[in-house]
Length: 196
View 1: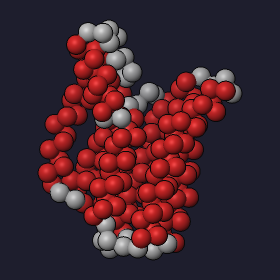
View 2: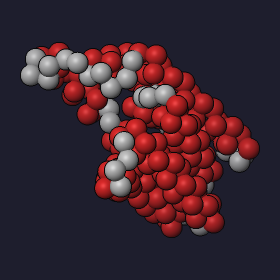
View 3: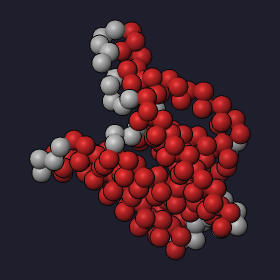
């Protein structure tokens, strides 16, 4: 593990913090919500569901697991399983409120991604950072502007950061990116099925 007092250690930590999954999810939600036409209640429900998922996944579920004495990996896995459930419920509410296809497809992609991350973390320490980063960049590049695809140039730095901090091996980060691609494919399929 890099000493975080050195320049490379600080750089690795900065990359992982700036590209933290919660930050990326928030950026994606706001960018999509601003660009998606549709009902205000559906937009509010989508943003509220995502905010709840971020709070539960980052703050609440890990602390509950810690108080129950669960090992860290089990806490992270169960946290993503719970987030997938909350996303599923949020998706149903969003659809019932008449959300546009773009928001529903995002919800489906997040649900697929969270489920695959939970499975990947239960068996192998796949990188949540690279999964979320890859899926979001591909989704924004598809739905908002192809300029978003240029952000993929940062992916090797994120993979380096995760390996330098000894959070994941390179292969685990690559598997995380593969999960992001699968979530993006679910997004494309959802858009196609919803007629968007």
